[in-house]
Image (cartoon, rainbow, N blue to C red; front, side, top):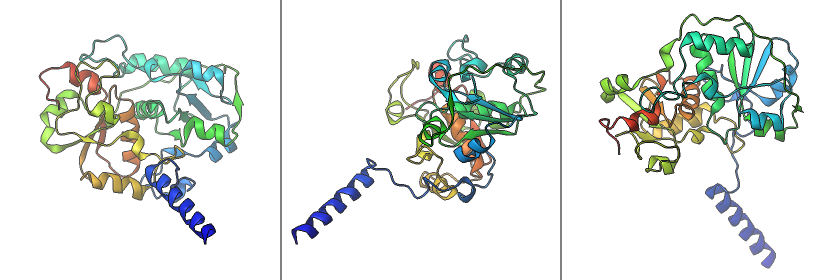
Length: 308
């Protein structure tokens, strides 16, 4: 009898730990991408797919974690860059800080890295970061490069699955690609938000601490955009850092009263985490999702704009 009670006690403890999130179990942790039923299944590639295509000549792999992490070890064949490389880091907060550079300068940046429209571009990062891979793919797609993907599970899953790792800095063959224009379908500005506020579902993708007022990254004011909803960008991840299924994403959004035809604005601090969520929502059929690239750096710096 004591043995039975012991087994029951262990079972109860395990269930409590799962409920609290200490032990991670998710029905979609190991579910293949093609079985997650995404409406637009054009964003993610799996670690297994990457292993099979690692030596393909028409693939460009981008490590978005930054040079320090890259130099410690990266996916074989990957080159290193960062979201900052493509962003205006010299502008004042409230006046374009961290937003994308103009298309002529971006063209030069693309050429330096060998980026063009002849390759399949796979970007990866660490999902425990800021969603840097999403920001870069968001930018590439706006520049007309639709054959661009995110590695599902990112660097942690690649390491865990014993993917091939290198410490060799890859040489880059420059391209001659020129961006004709930036398609702003996935972008929204401060002025557009103010003008259309009543028609928008605004999602704050930051952490709970930031939502409640913490100014961790030097924002001018703490808090969130008035009447915004809070869905942390990492809420769309499984415990193994892969993306949740279509059904799970819909459930999260429905709980907040957001539906596929809604005009959705995602924001964070600098439009990085929110770019990632914008792409995931687009993949899930939320066709009007847009990234507020200026995000809290701009909104909080403009004191006439309402915050809570």
